[in-house]
Image 1 (tube, rainbow, N blue to C red):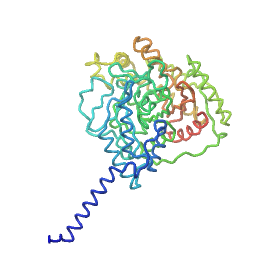
Image 2 (cartoon, one colour; image 1 turned 90 degrees about the horizontal axis):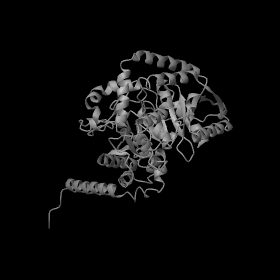
Image 3 (cartoon, rainbow, N blue to C red; image 1 turned 60 degrees about the horizontal axis):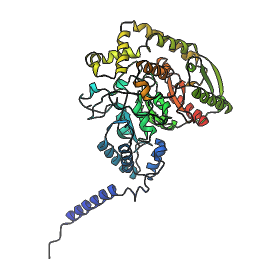
Image 4 (cartoon, rainbow, N blue to C red; image 1 turned 45 degrees about the vertical axis):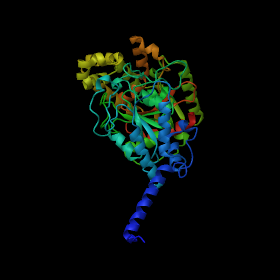
Length: 487
């Protein structure tokens, strides 16, 4: 008869088998423990809705990540992604699943997959900023600070999305990479809006649950408006830019593109390391909105004008106090920017990338190079006088709008043009690019926080709600009320 193993060895073997059994069960129980398959409407759900399904164990984070990668791989139009981080995403999803099974989520968005504009550093990956010049750069040695904050909240990183080269452009085209097509107007290939082009197209096509971009003159709000999304331009300095490729540091901001205000608010709280407090109900009769007339309506498409006017009427019918007038500071800022090639943004952009532009300009997207060279000319001007004028107008505006809860205007005065039209003619590109940026860049230059809300129209039309610097939480709370009325 064989000798009996000592008790401590028997216990050790039992623990080993138990551990192996639990591990096998953990990685094979997607259906039995976490229940259902991916719902058919998953691509239309908000990130917070998906988060609730994950937390209720209705879907599995691993299944969800695999679903998104299958959708991305089978996407037949030009992909909005320039890099997929499949191993990383699956690793993060496995950890998320473990936390959810243990009922210990890191945030309401634990397990939710997102995409990032290719300006954000991913550890071990090259940040190209949409430029061939940077394709052979060294990989980043760590994540951008905001990517790390998202990871700490349990958010899963699917990969990086396309951008206008160096993020300098509102149309969304990039002749050196593939230009993703507008997700809403599909009659012919149309521009996606930029510069966070891929982030807008990926989310609008259901290839992620939320996405991130940067906004220096409208680069979160433009692709959001043109793809029927919520786009939040945060106040300068509220979200870290460490590990984010710069364009113009005086104006650069990080912001989310989402399907709901709640998503934007949750992501803002995560990226600012602040508590998510939800929304406070506001009595409509206590809200006073200033609809900006004048400049934002010049050369506006009649469909956009009609949709915006109907939205304003609906707000008034809901009991919100609407005041309509021109704002002196906005008119003057528009003139200042128009007289100076868009202001100091392109001058800062040239100064930031001067060495590469001067040495490798022939490798650049010609439209972006053209704007960079305008920035070179701006360098010869007295930039301080422009900065001082902007600061003076910003201070004056903040006083002017202090009696209002927010100001409101169309996000963009035009619908997205065809890709062919803007790629084949420099003057046409410049004209459309200027119109795309005209309203949005006002918020950057005047130091406002702003959010673009999609209107319930067939075509992609947005209205932009703006509030004073560092009033981001108040803006989000108000936007939730406004959005519930207009949608």
